[in-house]
Image 1 (cartoon, rainbow, N blue to C red):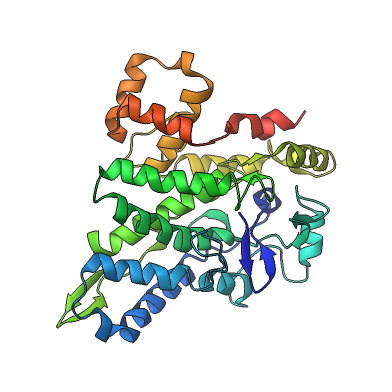
Image 2 (cartoon, rainbow, N blue to C red):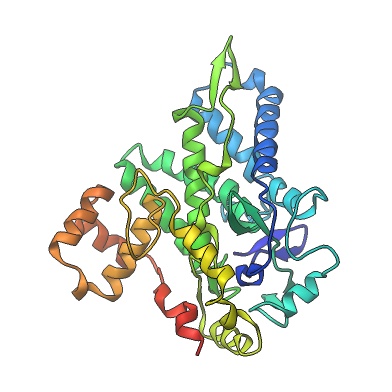
Length: 357
């Protein structure tokens, strides 16, 4: 994903770089940051919120968390304050390790020798461990900023359509960003992990009122239930697990870099196997567990089904499709229209099994 702030460009991560490297779980620090910040947002705006409805307050919270630094209006391109904190705080454990420059990180990555965006040098994002999942710090801005965009679009669409179709509209917007300005056409990367972080941010925005995290007490909105980021961060945020797709030129570069990086050797090693098994054991409830992918959300299930529907329709039985439509609460004509609208490149073409000898 492309992120622009103050003229600098950043926004891609190489999760493979994190393989074999132990990181402290920073879940508590993330929870503390969110709880303190949301509390302060509500205090700062208490007079404005006195007569507001909860969804309006939730949207304002998400806007303040995720959209403070928009250089491009309505494009979802941003560096949220929380992402910058995660990249710079001396209290957090992250990769590259202290003493390793971002230039060296780039040289040792699948994006070596340097990531460029529209000709501009792009620093790769750091990697951090949250609730056992290794994520790029860019996912924080997806969670908060694109989550805000999803929620805003959902609230508008839900006035005239079903909750499921309203969500699909938001996901289609993000697909267009990944396939265009924020991804494939600019940096040559379409990130399914970005899309999962986006959707979980949308769920967080909804949960502010549905859970609820916030309530009105004596005419003032307050955070009454602690926010727990572990309810949203999941293994599908990790781009080495929920793999990205690449443009033709980016794919050629990645394949070439893999010939001299340890990634292909590490993929069958003990550390990666342990992490993968841990990821696969992630609790997917209340969603139906799937054998081929981690069904962590409506979005993850929809995107996987869309790939099957577009690229291998002959393998889908009527019984299987019926079960999918029932769980997603959509119809085949709706999926058909959606599949024609979105790009959703085939992930299986971009796995290490396809790249490594």
